[in-house]
Length: 104
Image (cartoon, rainbow, N blue to C red; front, side):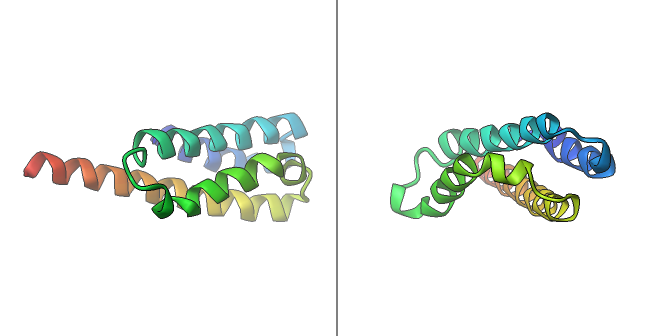
C-alpha cells in the first residue's frame, strides 16, 4: 500500500472545503482500488472466510460511493480519517509481514 495514498488523504482533508464532488469521488475510488489491490496481492493466499471483513468493506464502499461523496464536509472528513487510519494500519501490517518473511 502506497504511503502516498495516506498523504493524498491528508491533503484532501486540508483542502476539504475546496474539493468538488468529482475530486471526492476520485479519492474514494483511489482508496477503493488500494483496498482491492491489498485484498488480491497481500490477502490473496488467505482463506476467503478470513477475509470477509475486507470483502464487505470493498462491497460497501463500491455501492455507496455517491453517498460518500455527497456527505457534508464534517462527515466526509470523518470517513477520510477512518480510511487514513485503515490504510496506515494495512501498510504497517504488510511491511511487518515482509520483514518477518525475510528474517526466516
